[in-house]
Image (tube, rainbow, N blue to C red; front, side):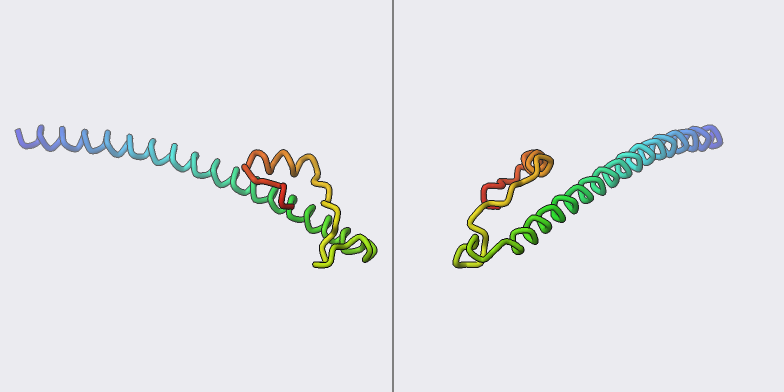
Length: 97
């Protein structure tokens, strides 16, 4: 009788371990996808920052008469369409840029 009980308990444990392994695999796949998506988002943010930096560098090269007293440009730099769309996706307000 004890052997049957032990075998039954062992069978239940094996089944539980199998379910946990499957769950672990699904979680691992989800984390990998999330990491890939995050890496893609970070690459896109870096590209946007580089575009913004390049725009500011271009602004610095303009003649001094086009600058406000605080050193900034009196004209707003044009935001590339891809940057505008991504900012909207992220909920970022570009009106202050």
